[in-house]
Image: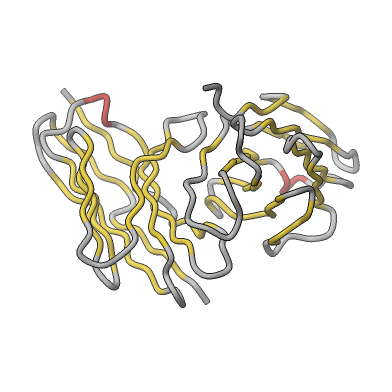
Length: 114
Length: 109
């Protein structure tokens, strides 16, 4: 079974631009979570989507948003990019929401903001 | 607020030199504790889930244990390919994973 895939793998943007990252979960998984990983803050939870609805949200500004489609694929968007948004953005999928189902991670998208 | 603390931050081992990593946590209503390994430039790879105090799980040279306040990841006779950052995460009632900062392990031949 194919794992979680994320596109693009690398992205370079400038301050003020916006960016959209994509995530395809493992087949049959309906929950998708997004995390930001930086050297200083580690892995931090952004949000979780299930059945096209945001179920859980971390402490990030409104510039960070996401959505999920009927096929469970998910996108996250960051508007008005700041230098501090440079990070590895990880997507994880699991079977259901609100359970202790294992979250399986994708390879991540490395975003660099100049 | 939920907190996860991993120690040590870094660990350098000789091949064959066994050691343990610690993950201490304070959460309201632990539902599960997860261990992942992460190689540079890659996403975390799932290792174990532990649900209740006293539980133990093993996989090759790794063994994870859980008490009411902490978890240990024991690495027995490590090999260079065990070099990675090991991440601990807890899941409380709200469902999201709260990660520790990780322990970077380097195993030298």
